[in-house]
Length: 403
Length: 120
Image (cartoon, rainbow over all chains, first blue to last red; front, side, top):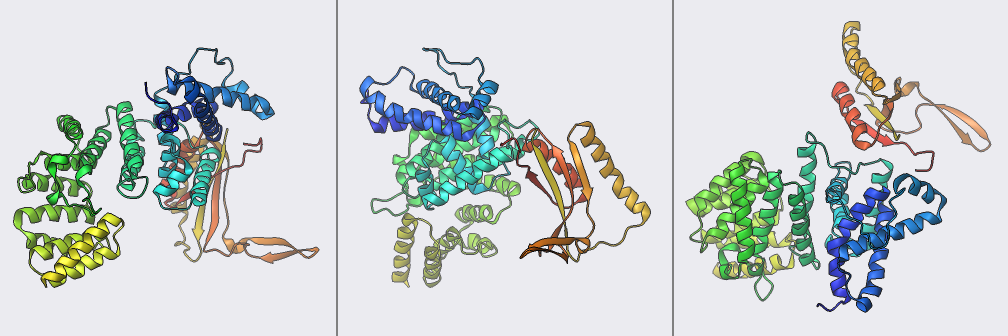
């Protein structure tokens, strides 16, 4: 029996609140009512559970309590009574009965949160707040903005959903490809936002949890499965990603023994299933690239020809300079650093720090240390995380010493 | 049922080549067909095309007088050129109509929700 403390309740809340908020939005047709009621249920749980112990089904307890709270509030207002008459007539909860959330509720909600009528910033903030159960302060921290700014952004987005009547519905088959794209992008961005910054672990866990949930709800969508595999395989390398002094460790230098074998196995199984399905898409291909990496016993043993073939396929689907850059790096492992550098020098990636870091690495391997120093320095000026900065400055010092 | 304004704008100084009557009729036909479709779907409330901005007049209160002046009030590059008022179940349905309009006239459409006078 676990100790019922605030940390445990917080964890349960985060896992369950998305489901409860989603089902209450279906019942009451209003995000604020749903959010407030679920918050209240959580506050009540913090008071009751440490004394009475966990209820048999904590998620259902939160949903039922939140629904009853919402009904109580609505009864007190005249407009609320009207609304109640319309939406929950005859669905009063009797003691012992639990509100069974419809699995589709969360799926409907993520399509509302990621509706293309909302800005990309609003989409990701709403998803983390409503489905991920993060507080406004936590969402603000994750995106390095002040809490009042994030609160305003969330309020504005919720107003738009309400007043423009953004529907709460899974899009039709015909709309799905266009509407799924921002959903997958939001989950991928959430994961990436978790690769640095203070709430990193939570964001990565959240992104994986939501992606898994959506994959479970849309088993026919190969790209959703591809995203899950990509996140799992990326996450599998997390334990090897930082050195004890907090510097980023490149793939070639990582301690492969510390990679998470269970995540790799799960990711590989999904990639294999995707290959059998044969409906390739950008997330599936990126997952496959990661699967090739995790198959290799060492960096030198990596099947670079396979990786290059996958990058060729990815580049034909998403011909962006970043994909071209990553393809060139793979090319460099087969045909040497000069071949990669020739491609990189034809790309325009502005001050993108990973571009300058990649150039620096190739120059270093070619023995052009003065140029390598300049490229490391340029990468360092636009590095986004502390770990990258420590890594780049370390390389910069070495390159300067070799001049 | 929620109401939406679908509005289209003209950019000042980009008057198109004047059309022949035949061209005008050709351009107008699909627009009329779309309006008929909106009407039979119960979506159409009202629609109109507006004259150029230099035909607009502004009245405003100045002190205790109402002053009439030439021109639109908003000094902007783009001006309202025409609009539909439609009823739709939700934003997706409204966007569906807006997509059809924008395809026909090849100019962007803004979709604005009405404030529900019942308090919504």
